[in-house]
Length: 368
Image (cartoon, rainbow, N blue to C red):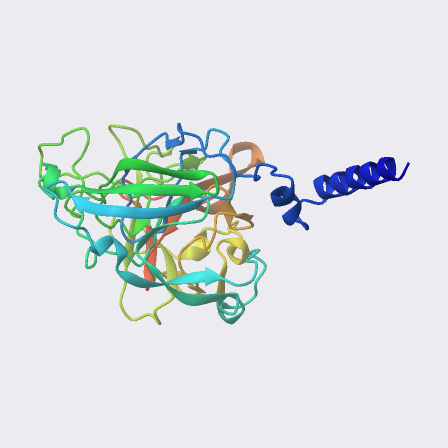
């Protein structure tokens, strides 16, 4: 009887150990139970191992295929080298970038409120985070990291290679031969007017050998805008561009200004008040709006947009949205609403203006 009770007590103790292994680790040792280890697959890999970031803007790359490996895992960049074997160090140059310490929601009412939600931190220019995502920070420019050659000839010695060590308690894997091939800065988007290799004007895609011509940014759409002289709808297509856009810096601002201007076919600026249906208070997340005879200006925080979330000023897909509109009376007393719009980014802080140039003829604002 006493022996039977001892056996029952021993079995109860064993069941207790099995149900509380996280607290009583000694049970596994006492009864020689196997340790609980993470799983790491031999097939863990990335779908795309060629990383082509644009310098001067935040770049995030992720194509990790964990193949059921246990998370979390640790990631470490190792053996960074050029194609000729020389070591790479410029990718890891320390840069100061912004880190959000409170949630940005697009409802902030001043630059000071925005700035209070983020702080400057020092990070390597290029790094991998705890989720296996590769990040190149916007503060990494061509001054720190040389872009691909301007002559468009990519040689092995121009390519930065690295390997990635991935580990958890189940083991370690080495994923080899990632490539980093940076593009020169393009400080705004759309950037169809910039040659990505040289930073100069992009050639006209219709006549690429004609050095007197270039490509331009165009609005995303034009609706019901007719010409002052022809009274025909203004259009943008491969042969004719009635409205083109310049995104360019200007001098004399306070370092965080954004202006909107409208240039007529004669090169003179139109009064923004002509665009009488524009919702100026909802155009951008800007402050201290200033309406002048030839521009409208805001104080803004950069980059634009500040995050990828959807707000009153951005589409949630990573670009800001602007629309300019005006109303005019058409035939038969019908009011026509004309508009045009642009989705855009500005990555580099400073004083910038976005100019809409009606290069062939001005819009007709007068009623019929």
